[in-house]
Image (cartoon, rainbow, N blue to C red; front, top):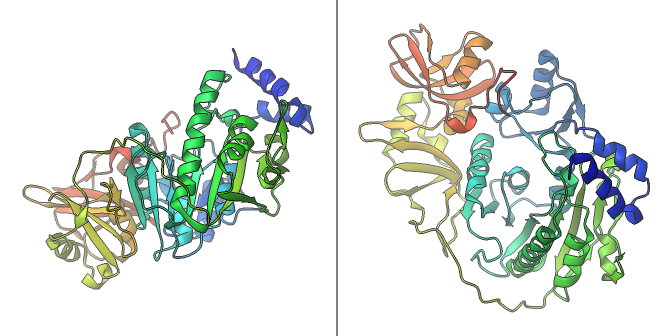
Length: 477
């Protein structure tokens, strides 16, 4: 099935749900405009807009999402200096709506069962703040690195990453304030993405998705405290994966609440589909069609947990066989960091430090802690690593703390030098202001990260995960 045939199949399948089939078809033919939201931990909206103005980028505010923008003439927003520095996150516009509906509050403890690549985790972590925490879980190992890269680049110190099956994630039951289930699905709503290779849905795959979705939603209901919120979302149009899953799982354990996002058009959840009727409160769910807001397609249901206890389902857990993160006993690296970069030890007073083994030191907020029931993959962001004969600072820590550093900071002279650095290249650089060894590299207001300065040369230590071909027209995004 080619792409056009797949689009025609969507039109036939959802004809009875569409208010304007022609507008829907036209929307599917039109590529999405890239969209981003600004990271307040690293910059401000004003500084971001000043950068866009200088770079000739047309940043159009998203009216319903504060700090969100459409970039109408920027084809590769994931390959810029501010992106590397963590100033913003690139996210399909309609996906931003999920966390608005979840409505996290400061200080809450929240679980994201299917977290990669981390956009919704990041939005949630920013909203709960340093007094709250987020467990960001991901099952697929190949997606886990993208999740951790997002957390590191944005500087999210209140996130704990776990690697487990979200259907059986062994966390305390009835304990969490909110749980996010952005469920794997057939992905029909993502057809407008430039990089999307969706060409139709095999019904066997749809049934597989439905089985996974039911288990994820049921487990989310068991994790959230009575009175708490479960947010269920997908990027597909199919009632089988949306309203039907809600109808089959919720029972008396949860009720679907109405919610509204001003200036964002939506339609109610459907009560009937192909001869099957669903529970009445599915009408409170919201469907976002591509032609209504010039976005991708999305489905959101906000569920309020009842007091009724959920029986535990027996399951065979397959958990990582590795040691748990422990409170750090070795903190001499922090003293070295303070001396090397000219900061006072008090800078680190608000944070807690964790290690697994004796090599890497993580820095996190006091409120963040790994689960006691199984090993976490990471907590907060890595601060430094202990090598055999040296201590090495981590790029993401230097980016996060860069504005406080007073010694051994290299100020790059121009954009060309900055582009060479973030592309992992070495370059000649004469400066008498830094000592040989590890340095922090900055270009104008962009905190870029770790380098090594020796004998008139600056050697980039940018991690591979941040090598996005910045400044190269043919680079991969």
